[in-house]
Structure formats: C-alpha cells, structure tokens
Image (cartoon, rainbow, N blue to C red):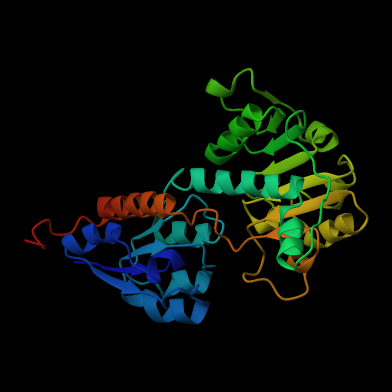
Length: 314
C-alpha cells in the first residue's frame, strides 16, 4: 500500500478521525512536525518515500517536486494551489486535487466578522475596557453602505448574501460573472474601477492574477473612496503592503482586516502592528466543521487515486 504524507497544521497537531479511511485502506500515514508549517528542508526529507500527499498551505518548491520520485497525487485540504509549482507537477504527471468550497463558510464568516469589527472599532474598544477605560468610539453601520466584493465564488457569494441581508448595497466583480442565482436582485455586477470608487467596504475573495501582480496596489488605492474598510481573507499577494501602509497612514484606508500575510507569522513591527489593522492568524478555515469537511474531501480524493486494500482493517 502507499505511504501518504500529511502536512496541514490543523491535521498534524491533532490528527482527526477523518483520516482513518486512509489507514483502513492499508495506507501508512507520515506526518510532518506537529502543528508547524514544514519548511523546504523537512519536505525534502519526507517527500522521496511517499506516493500521496495531503497538503496544506506550505510553500512547495520545484526542488521538492523534483525529489518526489514516487509521488502520484497531491490532495489539498482547501481550494488554493498558489503554493504549488504547477508547471513542475504537470511535467511529472502528478495529479492535483482540491477540496472545493469545503472551508467557504468558515472563511466567509471570518470576513464578515472582520468587517463588523472594523466598523465598530471592536479591537480598540475591547482593549480599552480591558485596561479599565470606557472608550466610546463612533462606529459605522453596514446597512446603507456600499459593499464591494472582488471574486464571486463560493466564499464571495456567502459574504455578498449576508451583507445584502444586513441592508448593504452589494456590488461585485468577477471576470466569469457566474449566474447570480439566489443573489439576483441583491447583488449587482460592476467593473473593478466602479467598485473601487464606490465601496465603503471592500472584501477580496479572488485568486492571484496570472502575472502575480497585486489587485490592490498603489494605482488601485489612488482610486478608492476615502475611508475604505478593506478585508482580505484570500491571499496576501492580492495586496501591495507598502502601498497599503501609506494609505493607512494618510487615512484613505480607515481599516484593514486580514487573515493572511506574505510571511506567516509576520515579522514584528510591520503591517500587522499598524493600529488600524485587525489581524488574525490564518484561521479562516480553522473551524471544526470546515476542517472536517476539507479533510473528508481531501481523503476521498486521495482514495480515488490510491484506492488501497479495502480489507486492510478487517
């Protein structure tokens, strides 16, 4: 039977029962360091002996793929593949499988939570009360606000639907303009430039552009409505951090709520330390239900390509 590498932090720190079908099929599970994102050196040590890989968000270099002499399939416990060298995996014939929409609810709820926290200054108020003060900061309401959504996939649709129910005017940009379905009459499509000019709250739910350039850079920030609340639970590279810091300093961006950073954890004193940044530690998909769904789908995808021995556990 196959050896299968398990690297997502949420699975190595406390391996869930959803992994058991792999053992039941006779496969041997190989875990990276519990609770830590494996670096290249650890991956190079573990990868040569495995046929399958249940992978997380850890960066994977071409050198790692070159060392994966037996690898047949990589099954992500999420939807993104930005961390994988797809040209190298394609050249080797390694299949890439994803757990589509498995963490959509968790990520969408976090994005909404970050927007609410920014609107009501919740981190500053909570911190002040904890220190014995009684700060009473005037907030903003979502009802009547224009909310822009960039990317109307599974996560973006959930955010758009909730924002519409809260009374916001919701406008969305997506190059594929998928059918709105239940969102018809609640969400309108708009060009990105229109969204930048009109939105008081902007939430990003899109993949990285093919050229790797940020969606929100200096040019985009020059077009925004002053006082924008910007939310990013998607990918750190969607934001030009240097340009964003300048926009936070001069007030064009009132607050930035994010779950993702280029380096995780981020270095002290950078963007995460800015007083108008609400930062979380890449926890969007880290809910009990999201982890179970994503793991179950990732395991099913592995078993499709590495079926194993159905009698192994008998």
